Length: 416
Length: 224
Image (cartoon, rainbow over all chains, first blue to last red; front, side, top):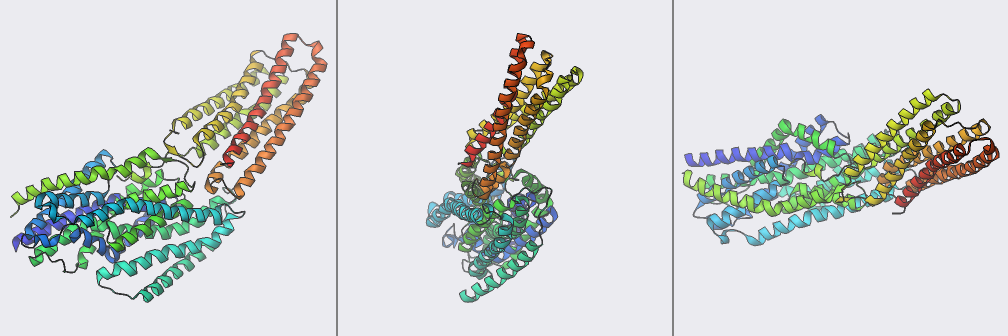
């Protein structure tokens, strides 16, 4: 019993630490555009991020958590050696945390998701045996790392191309923006809500029929769109700054939309990335509590909440500073462009979360930004950096694996 | 890690380009006062204005170098990087010509014949107008990027460039008239000075030519 408490305590501490790191660093990517474009103040952004990261983690984080917990390793394999799974999951948390710490010190562009998946595969394949890994599932995950930025890129391209066609290239962009932006708000709210209800909620024990899901999503999205339309109607052109086409004011209209997509993005991020911290914790808790590797055991919702709280603490402590810095650097992502990127990324990520695929939210967002760029939406994108970012997982996965193997043997020797 | 997203953005050349054309225009604008002082024979004031011109030309030059430095080949942009660099180059030449012509006039303490001085000032003013219209057109660059170089904004800039062309045609006509007027009185002026007077007219006219070329470069961007 005492050993079990030690395991659970250690897992919780490591997990919260990971969640804290995710909150401190990654959330900035979701919120910085809104702050940079002045659609939200820093204070508002932190509040929005805290609420929606938490909601995303709790309402839609179950799928990916379950994959991290029991989808990568074959839990049946541990039936008679539960403690090995516990060591392995603790080692994975340590490994991913260490690698992220090293990488962020060096300024390497690495992803939490790649680190943790690499770590889990590493300890299982080397520490236990190659057959302990569910390779087809791992293959699907790796494939999703390629597909998710691509998908987000294509969606972002289409969204931004439609914005150009319907609004930016018209004679009177301001009138057109006021007319069409509420529809984009509806679309943004609708996709995220629908996917969450359809795919996410089942993991927290709520089952809603498909018909009802569509009804609820439509109702929520419509009410958000109506509020947005009212706010937009009040926006008046600024004579002093505006040129003939009123693009300055047009961007302010998109700023309203951006608040909605920022919420979606925070929600999506919470739903996918909370699992990186909390998936291994859930595995340890399930194993330690029952003594058997209960693949059937339901995911306790307080574990998801733990992750949500960790992310919010990270956000509150360091996130503020990071959001401000990143926001200043991405001024090219004006609301009309930023919303397209965020909406595309959020949609892709939420779908992945619903399917239980752990993907890199940052890579997905970078893919989406590139999509906007392809539609001639971004002034200058540094392709060298983009290449480096997409190549980073090739190093991160083996690095995470290697570290987790080391920690695994260490814990095996030290822990009871 | 946090800068992952931020780092993929190269520094945008758009606002710097608009700032550069503004400096170049402000440089050419000084020519009016400069020639007024020169015609009045007030060389102290002409020298002071020439200092301002030189300073602005330097400023434009420094900004030009900085823009170039921040436009590496690895950048992915909606319009070719080369076209933007060419635009920058012709913008810069407006300032260069201004500096050249003011330097020449001040160095030789050139006397503009009173018979042509009014026409001369009119010509200078029109050349400065051309630079001003070039500035107005380039200042639409950010809006062009917003619209992705298509649609209503493109027509707007096209019409601005048309106006620029009209102004440049004006300067050509004024230049021809000015030459004719100078020809009529050149007998009474020392030959060397006459040659340099023609040279000053030519250099000043080139400011308008450069402004027109700014329009041509912008037009190239529009066709992408």
